[in-house]
Image 1 (spheres, rainbow, N blue to C red):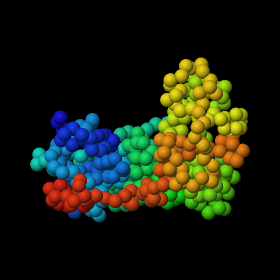
Image 2 (spheres, rainbow, N blue to C red; image 1 turned 180 degrees about the vertical axis):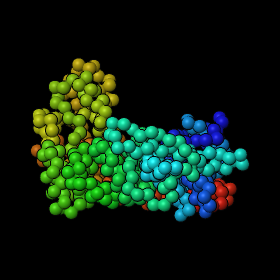
Image 3 (tube, rainbow, N blue to C red; image 1 turned 90 degrees about the vertical axis):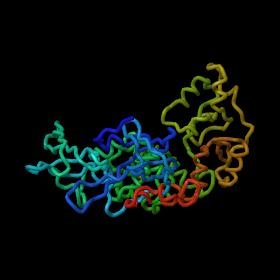
Image 4 (cartoon, rainbow, N blue to C red; image 1 turned 45 degrees about the vertical axis):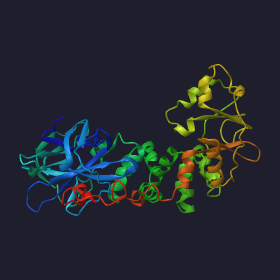
Length: 438
């Protein structure tokens, strides 16, 4: 693979990074440039890659042997796993420059940055060289002209950015999983994070909030107007919405619940009544529920619905009417593997199993964990004293509430100093300068 001499950085976002053996180590999330005291464009010193467990590390530009639209390949050497931390004289190109309001010389035509190119000199040094700027226009039906100009023809690339848009940064983040997007938001300054979060649609923001630490969830929700906050809560799973509302003062909880649609607010109100650390407080009130006279084909169609999480879609709970919680009498459960083995026309009532006692809303979390581990289950039913199904506890609920409260906070994840826990060698630490490698 060959590396072009000019690369537009936004096009690298999400590209896989491979080690010399062809194993993927992460994905590109940004480029790091060092600001120089002269008027020369910033020097690109490396890329930021995101590894599993949301860890972002620095990859020195000197370690990279090839860059193309499909892959970034590293040369030999030990990979430094210390978490990336930006130094004061550095900038993150995508995070800090996309959507920045600038002016084009000559004439001072206003516009917004949509991409930045880095270019390699004959001596092998990479520097920011070209800027793609879209003109601002007052005509709502027409997009402004796109200019690709030299770095020194753009005013406003340095200094503190003013209030800016989010369209181009959102385009870069568009294909990320909610957990990865939540991780990217944590890297942004608070004001920028809230601005980008507010620009997401309600469903996308609801998914991302569920992946953020409680502190960030509350701050983003507080930055929205109350009507928008209520709309986002409606898009969240009831258990996630209840967890978030539990972080707010009771008067604010009541205001937001009153603004939600009654049929969306009612299950959340019910979940808020349960004691913390019990099955009632961690369960979802919207598992897959069908009557005993539903067919296997109907059950398979139901669990194929795209919005269902894997843990929820792994089984169907069979009850008497009504089919919403609290249901009629709980009859049992049918796992999806059993559904795959049965004729499509067979009825669920003929294949239901009920040999494992359901949980009660008051069952404590350690007991839930023990029983799920004992029976190798990904979900368990929760029934009330009248044997009505009120919800289901899934394995992701158990993990979420068993881990430390700050487990979603990247800064709380211990950072290894080397692959084997030892200090990395000097060669592995990347070039001098750039705390980018630390």
